[in-house]
Image 1 (tube, rainbow, N blue to C red):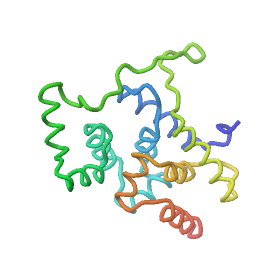
Image 2: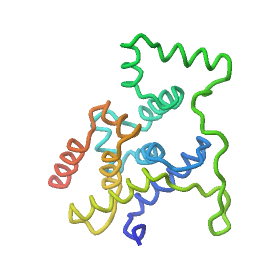
Image 3: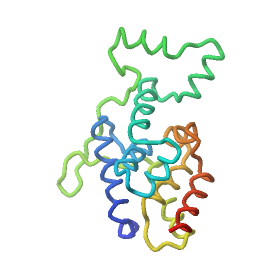
Amino acid sequence: MMFERFTRTARAVVVGAQREAEREGAGEISPVHLLPALLADPTDVAAAVLAEHGVTADTVAEDLRRTRRRAGLSDEDAAALERLGIDVENIVERVEQTHGEYALAGGGRPKRRRLFGVLDHRPFTSQAKQVLEQSLREAIDLGDRHIGTEHLMLGLLQQPGPASDLLAARGVDYPTARRDMTRRAAAG
């Protein structure tokens, strides 16, 4: 089983993603929920690598809040629409005046499931499952016997979507993170 290979901190990220999805009222755990959980422990290797690029729990929380409020549109998406004469922030404000804060965030009522008698189990989206599967491939490729947060970070960066877009906007893409991980491993 893959989860047996997860380190204690990598397992904490998965649990943290569950909590993040619950806090947001999401029915499923997506890569967007894995990212804040990855940054929960600033002393962890993945969080340290991301912090070198100015990516912290606070910056990610603000970026995700802004993206969620705009129905998932990234800053780049909003800028592209702005170039076409569409003011996304104005639209969001007008919708929220009528329908309330985060009206465009959607989501609806979360799916509620039971797993081993525990209510509120949230399944992983196919994209989040792909992040976890890619983290295993990363660990194997790097010759590691465990799956750590560094592997989760690399897996996350390979999954297209809001989480990797947010990191790319802050200068963190897969080649950069992989290089930084290799440099850190060599140093020590």
